[in-house]
Image 1 (cartoon, rainbow, N blue to C red):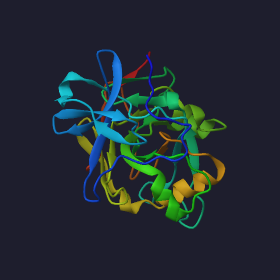
Image 2: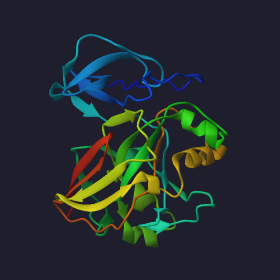
Image 3: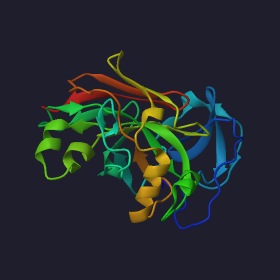
Image 4: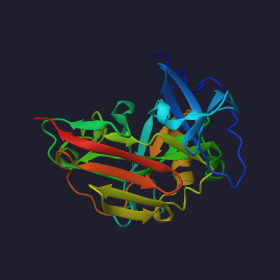
Amino acid sequence: MKQVFFILSVLSLSFPTFTLAEVSHFVRYEVNNQLHYGKVMGNQIQPLSGELFGELKPNGAPIPLSSVTLRLPTDPQKVFAVGMNFSSHLASPPNSAPPLFLKLPSSLIGSGEVIHLPSDASNVHFEGELVLVIGKQAKNLTEAQAEEVILGVTVGNDLTERTWQGRDLQWMRAKASDGFGPLGSVIAVGVDYNNLLLTTKLNGDIVQQENTRNMIHKPAKVVSYLSRYFTLMPGDLIYMGTPGRTKALNDGDIVSVEIEQVGKVENTIRQTH
């Protein structure tokens, strides 16, 4: 299946147009074994032509949201993550570089999919997070320039195996195993991502809830810092850290992370025996 969603070779791209007060929601979806992208309009999707990371135009009549299968919103080259970014969880010094690590693109899994944990993963915790979506190729940005390359945001769950995290040389296995990167289906464009309420629920009960304004290292700072060392590409993702306390998940648990004005990711946990 051909999954062309953005053009990496173009250096100068314009984002989908929207007014300053408007929040738009874009999705990548599958219908009749073909991938498309569109704009969510209530219970319908307006099909679009063009490029998500370029210019988009309506293409045909709206279709019911229920008639399509939503897919991951991007096909990233790189998936970054920030640690210790809320004092309610673990705090890093605000005047220091943001603590960073990598997740693998292969760890990403969509909302509604079952997460099958490895058989020896016995201490996997949820971590509800805001996720930035990069929209332009960029390098060596100032903080003032950084916001210009953030296309929008989605919602994620940075699943973490705490025992492995403390035992292994690096966090690769603990953070980037298959299915350890649940990701929402929607890219929200036009939201104030520095002021959004994030809520994580475990089997329907609230277990995390905090506003993104309490992030220690703000998106502009993180994007600017990353761009010193990595060429950011359209579709790259940045998990922005989790607030509050976390706990181990059990077989059959349902974890959901929701961010106001953005969307929700929800998955069921299955322990492999």
